[in-house]
Image (tube, rainbow over all chains, first blue to last red; front, side, top):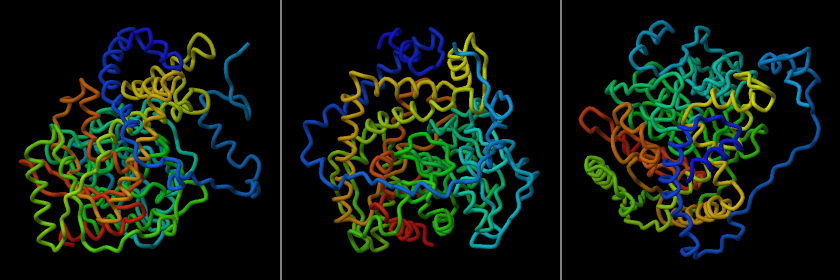
Length: 95
Length: 430
């Protein structure tokens, strides 16, 4: 994988990395992708029907009720925010 | 032990990130009088929970994890939070932002990971029991390296409410103990369905496929994979002989797809990591670093707050999920995951347990594998199948390589932790 590709992935991930780290990662990813790439062989070995109900996904629903009292957790949660103004989380101007 | 005594003993080992001064038993129950340490990614209200990361260095848990509530109700004394690989990403605790945990059996060696602190704390007698989390072997591997018992439960057996998510479809909280009996005691306290975690299961979710008749399957070809040390192979053969002498039938089995498990794991896990860790943005909680503008704040906060391995996995996960590669990696992995799960479930109609070593070798020297991430990843070869399939698995102490402990691992069918306890107690003579 090219270094520029790594830098572009880092940008998509919203993580700042140095040129040197991108360079190192490009070599490491080469080795890792080479190894994990073996899953591509799976298609040739599939002998079972993968769409059967054995593999169904369960969905779990609950009623839209029993809400907690408004404001119950506000202080606890906001006290962990890096920056706040009253009962709001404060961020930099966006526009 | 008093908090002071634990701190003194922990000076050399660094199993704890914090020993609590306020530890007291709040109720009476099955864990009355027992001391329990919890991994630093489990929320305990009012206490710091940092996942051994700089990005959560001062983060105080606003609520209790379900397992913490259960511990308190059972009368346990929670003595501290234990060291780990940052966000549970690693196999040695060397990825902790606060320095590695050392193996109590040899201070120059790793304790394993990611729940290395919990394993070392139990091994060194600094607490009776501990909780860890296991996404690809993070309870069983450090248990093997430190010579204690470690259990990864059936996916959904223990509520993940209040556990910091790494790879949500694979993560499970589980116990460390010095005996199988104690591990079972803690397991019985923490298990059970929870309305706060919709993936939790009940005793009816997985009906028994086979009555327990003391049949153990040994995947010989898999056990003899490349990179497995001679000492481990010898120790494993001795374990097989021991089970035979205990009246177990040993059956050689062939698992054709299990060798895909590690590759599948290193695709699914980073994919989930990349989305789960998007929540750390320097806005809602945790570290905030100022950049040039609002979006640059994210880049700087995450770039500085996350350690190397976490950055590596986020970026790798972003790659395998990106357009053009998604089907090739993520899609194929889901297919392979189904194959592996199906193969194991079919096998458990014939055998009660599958026996393998827990690790390909004993604990390595601190720093020895830090240069090559792939080399470190390959250490997980014997543990990831349990997470990929959801099956429960337990690591049991099985002897030594010199002064370093070794472990064997039993895997059981979905929902069949009881079989692990039976086999484990027989093996350890409990």
